[in-house]
Image (cartoon, rainbow over all chains, first blue to last red; front, side):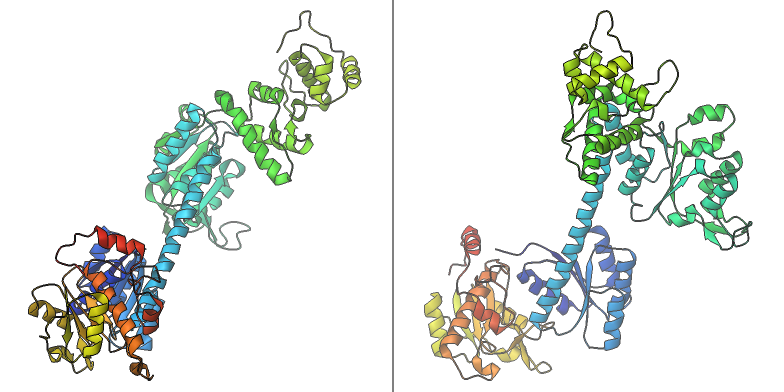
Length: 452
Length: 170
């Protein structure tokens, strides 16, 4: 059984050293290449990945430590072992401080060399595996959070994958509760900026003064109460993503400031004069029709065009009814696990009720309803009576328990064509209790009962 | 393939190695002095390999008592072209006397056979093997030489069988 082919790049200005190390590592079963200088090594590393670099410290021109610094500053994915012809504690410390895995003195004891190389490669492999697994976890998690088999959701997921890789501004449009922040987080997590923060600004929740300070930061004494200098969200993003939620809610003055930041990539703290360079990506979200607001003069057209580079429209839940059972099961599993309850699913009538609901509050409303059902319901199945779905009637929105119970009993009775025994069973109460409730609410079967 | 001595090599041991590996003996043609490095007090293994190639037209493995080195390493037990037609191994550090112990001719012969098979494996293109019992497992100390077996593991054997016999038949 031969060793898995790991790759090594030997960097030494002496031909004889290169030759003997290449020969030795080939025998050891590695894939080996050699370069006579640090610049050559860097161009080699730019064109292909190498697991381990073994470089001499003393080389004419760029020396080994400079090469090591370059490798580390460019975040090349490789381990480095430094070698030198003479031992010096100072050089060893320098090499290790700059991020070398280890340091060896020529000539090496074959056993020492083999152990150092094996350890370096083992660590490199583990790091790479760890990064890969973390990445996979993030990707799996990110895309499975956006639940839905509907065509609309497939399209949304595709758009997320497409736009995550590029650095353009994204505008997410969708009603409240459709998951705009979830989409923003997914884009951030799949983007090259994922190792930097994503900062969220809920624009609607902030007054004009506060939002300026929130976005751009402020200097000490900029306004009453500003006792300390504070960094704004654009600075805090530090190469990451700024998510501007409810972007339509900002004033025309803040829109102007925001437009300048998007154009110049510079901010000036409130009360400050010094422009500060900032690196960020903007994802904005709104539940309004921005184009309409532009027409009405309530939103700056130039800011709209700057934000509207790539738009993702999130469908309302009523536009993808087919996804409701899937989402309901997902939330049921989530809250059952959180609350240590043993729900296995929803009964048929409960599913039908969920599917037929109009969902003005979208996925958030569905999530809340399922969370409540997990609290109040009886295991193992969620039943209709566990679902606090209110149907506004005649334009009024009466949400008293009595009204809801009345509507719900009517619905279940209709489902069972007014068979009170079956309806009582579905409601989880005995027939006598149902009878009393029918009398109390003065319910009467229609002339000809039909299934709802 | 022939087995040849480089410099003074114990004749009895050379004959035993030839008998155990079934590799015929060849004439001595190389003076190791050409590879002597006074600074290191050792013999340059790569230089001796080049001498072997120059003095023997066919596949050859040289046996020596000289302490071998390559520039970056303190010593080597042997070296081989991979793949190729010349290889060399040394018994200098396989002898118990090197470690201050009384001589043990049987142990020395057993270690020398392993080194010989090991270098021949490289000649046939085999790299080091992870199977600790395989003769192709890496040995950077005499203890490691002692822990491995005298034969190839099934995987290495299969690789050897897959090779074209060419001029190298043991």
